[in-house]
Image (cartoon, rainbow, N blue to C red; front, side):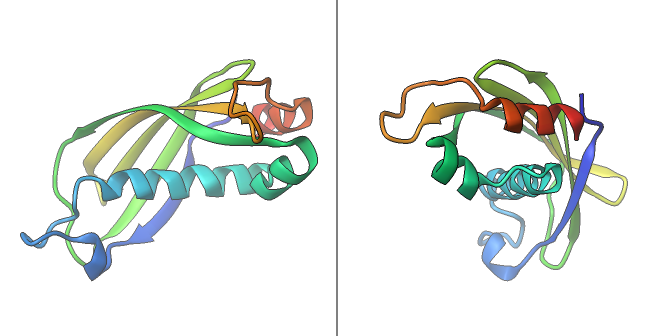
Length: 134
């Protein structure tokens, strides 16, 4: 299984709420970016997955715990690792850090579905192999 993957993002004004801290839902957007960049680094193109295999990824569930706030201009380190790579789904453990401070942690389960019917389907073997090897 893949080791922890890291991606960094900077907090912009648009990411913050009236209190000047990162709005809680934006961590889900940050985690999505990290998953997308992990797929890209693993050699899995989501566009090719759609065009060649007729498959897309959808979030089935997300559980997030918030530990500390991030603020404007902070640089966040996003990490992810695979908890489980199943036949038709992937469970990710994800974290957001600012320096040595854990800001948020999440478990996100993503399913593979047929793009036309939105029904669950197996991960294409070539994509699954790249994920296993990442």
